[in-house]
Image 1 (cartoon, rainbow, N blue to C red):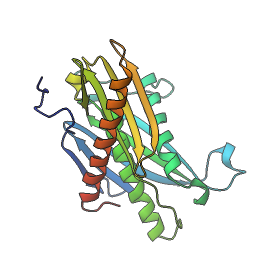
Image 2 (image 1 turned 180 degrees about the vertical axis):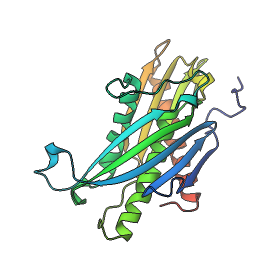
Image 3 (image 1 turned 60 degrees about the horizontal axis):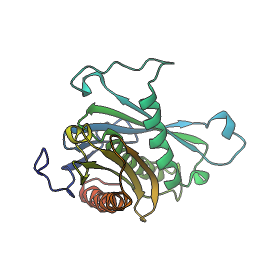
Length: 238
């Protein structure tokens, strides 16, 4: 059965990293994955959370938001103290998968703030945010090394891809129309050493078999390798 955009089951949507999209930020990019577009920035502030003050090193945290016009129906802005559960889940995910790729103990007492703002959503916003955040983080640390503010801290690349079972077929990188009718779906995050940082899998309409699970993991790993290739080919990659 042909996909909505004519892709093969193992094809990613066209992916593009546009570096230095926000010149005032130490690291930034606009990442486009099909019609999903996310601005990712990394800012640096002196100091660490209070619970870390007695420990050496720095900290990394992330925030995620969908702008009001990012979907067909206006997305209300999150207000202080009333961030929706999905937003909290995704921003925790972004921070959680990035922290193991940076030797935080080697940082001075600084906090790296990673912000992911969705301009347009057509499926895969969390995986696209992770891919863009990893790119922006590498750019920020490159700049901090050049300025002499950090020494010897180079993050591993992080890649993320969605996979789903749609109409009995395992498909890579679901667009919204496919995701909305998937029997089950999965988000996979890996580093460039081939290690898994996170695997999220759920049966939306029907259970998936062990064979489908393994096929999905293999397809995700292949897709993430291709994301790393696209990133390496981007001019200005950190």
